[in-house]
Every structure is written in structure tokens, then in C-alpha cells.
Image 1: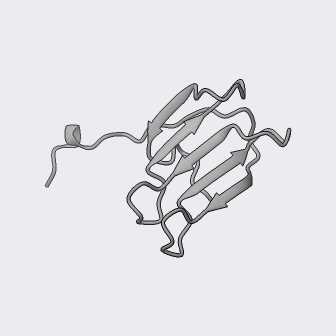
Image 2: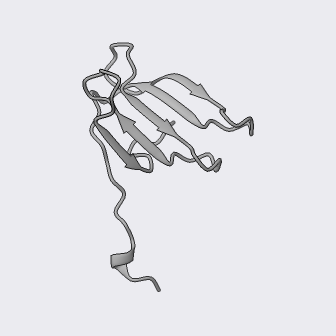
Length: 86
């Protein structure tokens, strides 16, 4: 059995809103699964949530949130940040 201290609690991130509209999804490595998600969470049509599958397993490995939509991420976390793609 693993030590509970060895298990990391997944980080969650706050986005601009509670909606999620994927503006772009891409299969960057050609394996037939989505690797990149670019999403709008507040309905303004601008992306503020960026997620990437970096190891090709079909799951989000890195999440970036750009709260002020200036092109520079405000938060970068391992995993889906509590916001898994639908």
C-alpha cells in the first residue's frame, strides 16, 4: 500500500466562467486522439483555457489558464486542473 503522503492532490484552476466551449481541438501527433484543447469558458468567444496531452494517452497532462486573455498564462498546472474535456 502506498503512503498517503506520496499521493498528490490534483490541482484545480479557476477560469473566467463556468461554461466550456471548445474553440479548437487538434490531433497533433496523428494517433486519432485529441491532444490539444483551446476553450472559451465565459462565452466571449476568446480562448482562456488551454489543455495539452503531452504523452499521447488521450488524457490532459498540462492545463494553462489565461484569466485576462492577454496571451500569457496566469496559471499552469499538471493534469486537467479539474476541468476535463467532455
